Length: 67
Picture 1 (cartoon, rainbow, N blue to C red):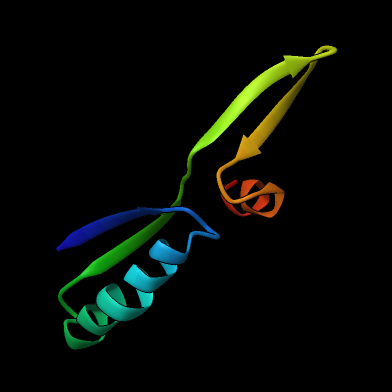
Picture 2 (spheres, rainbow, N blue to C red):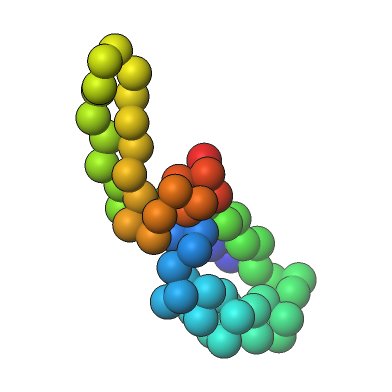
């Protein structure tokens, strides 16, 4: 089984899901499941003075982590 998990890199709920739900299932089914982690998050973007500016839900560090 292939699973893609879309998560926000600095989101406490994403961290909780990965550590308390996904990781135990992955350990139990190690040979039967392939997990693809996809950093993704709420963001906005604006073009200011010809340059794109991004704002992420959990701050600037999350924008970097979600690349």
